[in-house]
Image (cartoon, rainbow, N blue to C red; front, side, top):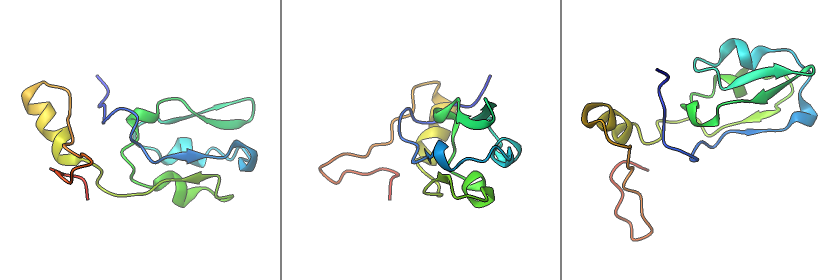
Length: 100
């Protein structure tokens, strides 16, 4: 089973127009977020991104951007123990359990 992070929260951005097909992102990503197709990279599993930043740091054309950080790690870890969907606790009223 692949680890899943919070859905639709990854800060990962990819500009395929800048991609030269070097495959560095597919080599350094620990969770297989990227794959190659038609000579360029593509995001195949955004929700597997843990925002480590390895892809962006190794992209020679700066086609990838990500705000590297811990994300809502506490919520994710607790979900592994409880078997429930991770809930970050971030809300507009300032009640933040684990997000900056």
